[in-house]
Image (tube, rainbow, N blue to C red; front, side):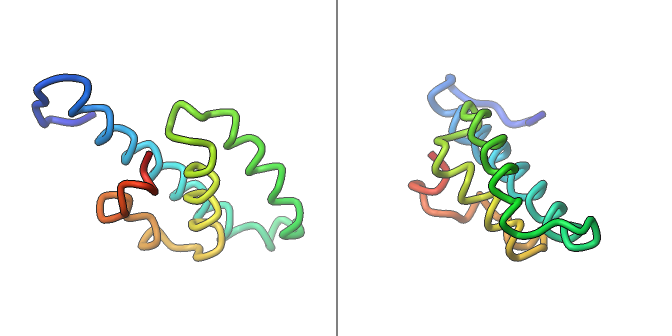
Length: 91
């Protein structure tokens, strides 16, 4: 995990959430890049989002959906920079 030192959980948990949301986005980017080759319709993506909602410990359900969808639509890891995102997008 991180090699950084944090004073307490209050300082550590927001950084951890950024990593977890970035992982959600990266999974969306991968899924988006192969989706059509699997013969899937974009409307089937709702199933993926519903699965992502069930892991709300990585952030709010709204933000998980945002990052998974962002990665899926842009199909590139470059779209997943949670460390430069506004605080409201990594809550």
